[in-house]
Image 1 (cartoon, rainbow, N blue to C red):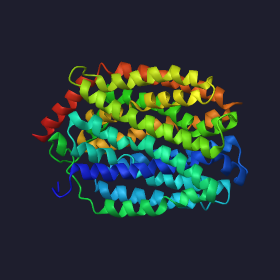
Image 2: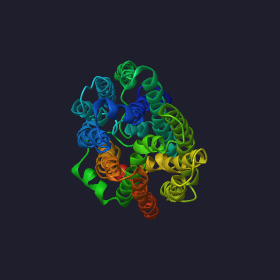
Image 3: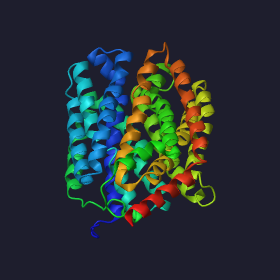
Length: 411
């Protein structure tokens, strides 16, 4: 690895890119009522906008995952960031609902070239015992970027129209793409002390024979099914109550709460997973499951609590939901061979989105009211907790198996 580029520099760059990634995703959620009015779309149609993005994202992620195991990952990151930035600007130009759907599909293509790749770069730069916290910092961009998306969408839509929010992310995204192209490629498996070699078919098949990988992926699918649907419809739900202020204020409050609670929850989960790792071999699974189990009843109580008190429960729910972000990603990295890690993350992305957030917003849109939809979809939080509690018994064995395999094949 080029010594002029430190692991921290790579982490900061990927963190900033991820921030813009989630800003772009949630800008759309923040301006759904305005887009509905302008393009004459229904709730059910708008439920398809995140689905269109996720379909292209999840279908192409395995393609880019395989490429990420064979070519420069920083080049793929640059391509992805540049493409989704341009596609986001095109969303602001959409004159029809069909055009809006097409641009969101293009955003998905760009993110497919980035999503499976970035965590593997960090996994090659940081050792196993630090990955929980490092990946928590990286994924901290989810709540903070999402919150900025809500705030950016709400403020800019109020003053300059909903289209302006999509134009704002183009220039910064293109600049980040250029910087990514200049970054040197770290050797695959460097932090695992594994010799760089071509992956074999057995390495790929091993993914589906590893209980920790399978149960972690299924748990993340259940969690994503619930949280993505809730995140997409929450501003619209609160706006419909007519008790929490106008749309700009709702997006500002919800964005700020999501940022603060998600930031704290993500970092706390990563810290707890790493700290407990020496005492509890399945700590990454256990802290993830605990967060989901606690968050479920808090969310249900929130649905029947009036504002402004409901904002407190939204904060606590978001904290619990983000508690698993770093640990579950660390599990994926620690139980997969370095030479197929990009593919492993891509397979995870495909399954999580196919059965998770690609369908949950549309399903919620089918209900007669959003509260009923939230109650239905939130049950997946309990399923996620169960799957992660189950996975805890396998984690130490699966990590040791991968380490032994890596040592054997690099000898």
